[in-house]
Image (cartoon, rainbow, N blue to C red):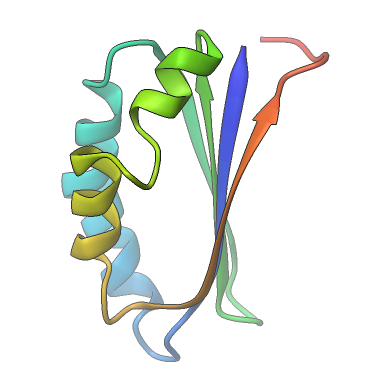
Length: 98
């Protein structure tokens, strides 16, 4: 399995709006991607920060939805104006539980 993390600062005052877009538009889009296993969104309201962790069946599935893909470009484009200092990373899942 592989994971992708996206960590970003949220523009002050726009966190709730960004969360609504994530819930209504982005999360359903993520769930439709081949090889998707799970998605979690973490927020720190005090620091206006958010992080998503998506888990994929394989490295190939994760890479198919990388920043170079139309899918991730659409996701990040939809949040343009909400995110600052965005960092995207790819990881091999080495342990854990479901």
